[in-house]
Amino acid sequence: MTRKRDDAVPRPTKKTEYQLVFCSREAVKGWQDCLAAVRNAVVDAFDRLTAHPEVETQRQYRLQGDYATGTYAGVTYDRWQYKISDGGRIWYFVDHAMSGSKAGSVLIERAEPGHPKGTEA
Image (cartoon, rainbow, N blue to C red):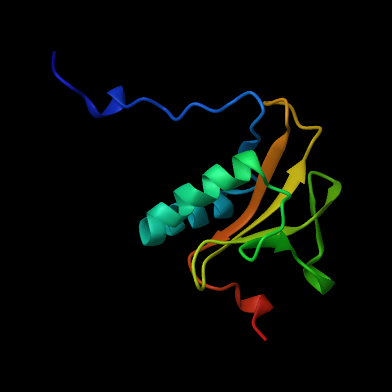
């Protein structure tokens, strides 16, 4: 049997895991850029966000001040950040009502391999 690249097995998820959803094309592009820059860290982030998107750690926490909330599809959410590297960040919302998994969805608003310019001190 000849092996083809598309024979790869997709990563399965547990029924209790959150589904990751991109909010925009920019988020997709940013995710791809992050994968190219720090693949292992992005895979770790994927695992963490699908299992525990609202558990605060030094890498993962709610943003504060002007960045504390954001809106997607007319709904306002708390905005979370996951640090994938010293500079790289993933911003996301957690929607417990979105279908696709029992737990809900993690809405990837932004993914950047470098620190977001607007949040620099």
